[in-house]
Image (cartoon, rainbow, N blue to C red; front, side, top):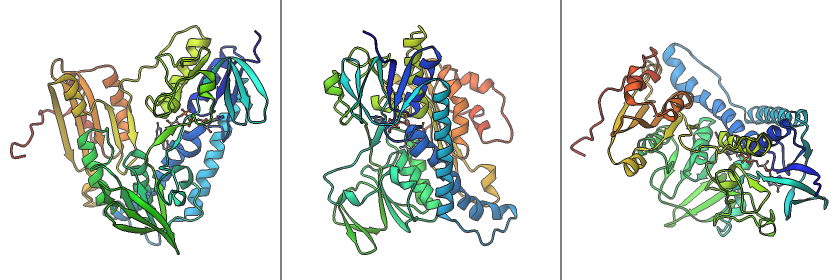
Length: 457
Ligand SMILES: Cc1cc2nc3c(=O)[nH]c(=O)nc-3n(C[C@H](O)[C@H](O)[C@H](O)COP(=O)(O)OP(=O)(O)OC[C@H]3O[C@@H](n4cnc5c(N)ncnc54)[C@H](O)[C@@H]3O)c2cc1C
């Protein structure tokens, strides 16, 4: 049967755009549908605008806590939310335009409307038309999850709205302990907002190494974020001039805005998965094999919608692997092990490989090398920002199986350490590498003593 397209991609985010371009570059006739804006979460309302907000936020600490120690007097500093918001929006527009242009240059047809699966290689467009394709790629990403049964949930915003607020709130309550909640707690605090972070666990950043979690929790408090743990909302009520959140146990918190960052859910609602025979997991993500094949012949899925490792570079690699496999004759499965990642807290986190707890569970005996210290930059200003460096080493063969950093430039440093961990280098090879001086990163190759737990603890 002749199809309209060789490949139809649903969703023009990181994963879909990469897959579409690579397939088209290998001669395929490709269309991509997008219901919101070309670029997807990362470009439009994720990594990129968030990182720009982080830069804006960091100036506060630099100007008020660090610069004076180096002799600078900064008077009359003032932050204007509208300038930041509008400049970021303009940058997002520019990047979205580049994504659209790259698709055009590759010969990919862009269909700017919602698309759903109709089964048997057919895609239904929002305008009622249908098109057929030899292969269909689902790359619809994920969206913020909302507790629909929470009374007053309609008064809350999510990370989708935070980038467009008409005014910066004076007081905000952020619910969640994952990286998005924690990053925005630091961002907004730096911009001068009174921030309360509400989390149902006892320490933020579940899944990260325990030392990282403790350090970030401490930094939140040191920066003046009010952290309320082991608590959730009972209800949210709108009052004159704000919102009142009632927490478990009856405690009430009055704020101007509440942001929910309590998880994300695969964007598969109403996508036609059942009709097309595409099986989903209990959490609504699409089940795939190592080559991103779904349970329906001719249908693949990549990126956050598959809930494997929800990061932009991973989505891009999954999209690329699919396109190389199907259109370049090079079977490629992306290896999800040892993906380095950063959390843009202030200071940031960089992490790769296994946490100490996971390494102990998997390998039994592990050696820990770790240090905390005050980087040179913070000593003269007498600022308490500290650096954590931690290496997790498999005792049986000396291979470094994890590295966890909290401190200035951790996100940049971890990219290079990620190569070493992915290459399964040993602690002896780290030690054989000469230091770069004076840097904070040099500690990674000068950690000599195994860490021994304090016998008194
Ligand atoms: C606030 C925030 C901060 C983040 N920060 C980072 C970070 O610092 N580093 C990092 O690596 N990752 C970060 N992420 C995660 C990252 O953004 C995602 O992992 C990545 O965007 C996933 O790409 P994707 O292509 O799978 O999905 P998406 O980028 O979400 O793209 C999916 C696209 O599909 C479209 N779509 C959905 N359904 C349909 C349909 N039926 N028809 C047509 N179009 C449809 C959507 O509109 C969207 O444009 C962040 C996410 C958020 C929310």
